[in-house]
Each structure stands twice: as structure tokens, then as C-alpha cells.
Image (cartoon, rainbow, N blue to C red):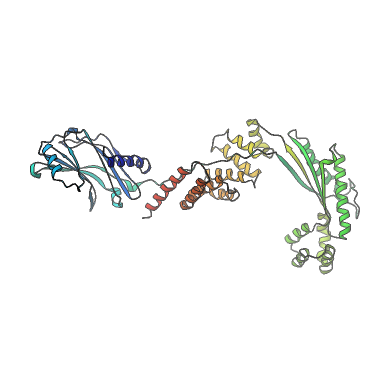
Length: 485
């Protein structure tokens, strides 16, 4: 086989799996015609490749005879003759060898010297060719080019313009989260009523029984869990803005300390487990309420709250300028600003049994780390409902975690929930895997140019598998461009 034929053969077998093939094998023609075998037609964006094997073992020619085999494409008024092949008897063969200029390219073969001729040709592709008929013209000549026979037979009808749309097939990359210490916390607010200007707790005063019970119930919930160990209890007390700031400092600190001592005495926890803080006047809480209210002088009160005035001056100006509104705030809002926020911090033991982790996913996912959820997912069928639900649970429990958002984005894209996937990708960070996932998102959104940019970036950052994604992108772009012509 000549070097050009070898090159064309390599091209043929590299294109066929990508662009589709029309095949015909074992066709046998009678009446001294050449049987055509292994017919293959394929195309790229702008090239058409045709290949076939000519079984010349059945061809019998006299020394002065030759057959000219010429493939041709026809479609209505359009037609194109492809490069011909000469199979010549001995005398005609040497006639061509002696008289054909060296500058003329001629596919010339001597009859009887080979059984098969491998025919290849590559031509510019035009739209009309997509539905053309490929035929073969057989012209047999005698001495002095005397025509003996001329017949044309159809080989196949092309269907290159009827390609199915290219559908992008993503390969998702999930990240295994790093194993971390599982420190969780439960938070709440209690509204303890203290006597006016006093710091001692009266357990049965007003709503104190319910509020104190709420704090203890939170601690007991963690304390009684065999899988959890309390690592800290934090209490922060707030006072309301009425009265002097200095006195409110005393009240906030004293009441916080009193509440802490009350809680500590209910258990055998060491004092080091507790931490306290205080806010003399809860102006932020007051601002939140006024902002959401429909008070007649809402804007004026907000300007004073947000001003740089000293706390006592600020409170006095609200009281003197907006008397009716202040009276309402003092009666309805200020009691709620005298609260104690608390948090119970605890560590949950590590889990290694996959069945136990799967059970907790359904009942107590707050006990699991991202890494434990990921390990459980690896024991599930990728793409199954159980698998997808695991990553949805992970991002629900860790809504700001970049890895959780990336894995959840992959799951959403797997389910073709692109809107939700976009929300997750916004919080997935800029790791190479996140860049790769954004390439998938763009491809599924039919934004192939953006997908190409992201996949190239991911490739530069060392992500495996981007070559396959880029190849698909090029195929999608080719199909898109062809159908826009």
C-alpha cells in the first residue's frame, strides 16, 4: 500500500467511530463488473471520505483491454466524478506507463497482479452531497481506446444530513470531604424575668419555670445522647436600653453570671465547661424590631438608633421625641430585649459502620460528618435515588461548605435540575473540580464555548478526563454549526 493510501486508511478508521458510517460488505457484481466490498462513507465538518475494496480477482481482461472504474456522486442537477481507477491488460498497462506524464497522478493497476485494490479518496464536503447517490461507472475499452462497454450502477444513497443531534454525556467528579472533628452546637434564647434592678433569679417568677426548663432540656438532649459529649456551654445575657448604660452593664453581667450558676448547679459539669458574655443594651434587637414594624415615627427612631450618639443620650432622645412610640416599645418590645442566648457545644463520635451511617442519614443526619456521608454514598448505586438523596442531605446539613455544594451540584446536574445546580455551583469555590463542574453545567445548558473554556482551564489544572469532555464539546459545536447553515 502506498504511503498516501496508508495515511487515508488511518484517517478513515479514526473518523468512522466519530462521524458515522454507511457500510456495505460483500457486494458481488455480475457481467464482468468489479465486486465492491467494505464500502465506507464518513464526513467531518468540511471533508467527505470514501473508502471501498475492489475485488479485481474476478476481472478478466485481454492484453489490449482496460477497465476504468469511476465512482461518482449525483443528486438532482449536482454531480461529481471522483478519481478513477484504471485496471489494464499487459499492453495497455505499459502504454500508460510509457505515455503518461510524470506530473499526472493516475491510479493504474495491471490486471492479474493483485486480488484487491483499496480505494480511498478525500474530497471537500458540500451540503448537496449529504443525500447524494454514490454510483460506480464501469467503462471497458479495447485497443486504441475503442469503447466496448459503459455501465453505471448505484452503490448506496448517503444520509449524512440526517445525523442525530449530538447529546453531551457528562462524567461527574465527586470530591471526598476531609475527615474533621465533629463539633456541633444547639442554640436557643431564654427570657428570664428578673425583679426590677436586681440580678437574682426567682425560679417560679412569671414565666421563669418554662424558660429555665427550656435551657435544661437543651442540655439534657445532648447529655443523654450516648454518641455525644458536651464540650462547652455558652451563655450571653442582654439588657434592654431603658435606664443608664452603667447600670445596664451591671445588670447584664450579674444576671448572666446568676443564670450560669443556676445551670451549673443542676449538673456535675466542671466550671471550665462554661463561658459567659453580656451585652448591656440590645440595640441590634431593637433595630430589627423597629425595621419590621409599622410605627408612625419608624424612620426617625431608626435614625436615632443608628446614630453615633452615646447610648444614654440616644435612649433619652427617643423617649422625649417620640413619646407614644417609646411607650409602646417600653411596654411591648423592651421585655423581649432582656434575654439570654445560650449554646450547647458538643462532639459526636465517629462512625465507621456503613449500615449505621445509612440509618443515621434517615433519622439523625446532624450526627454525621460530610466525610461519613460520602463514604456511605460510595456503597450505593451512582445515580440511584438513595445516592442522590445522600448528597442532598449533605448540602442541607452543611449549606456553606464548598465540597458539599460541589457534590450537590453534580447530583442536581445528573437529575437535569440545572437551576438548582447553578445555586450550588455559586457556593462551590474555585477548585479545579469546581471549574470542571462548571464546564459540565455550561455544556448541559448548550453554552459550548463557555464549556470549552472551563474544560480547558480544568485540564490546565490537572483534572483527568477533560480530553473526553472537550472531544464531545467539539462534536456538539460541529453539529450546532452544521445545523445553522
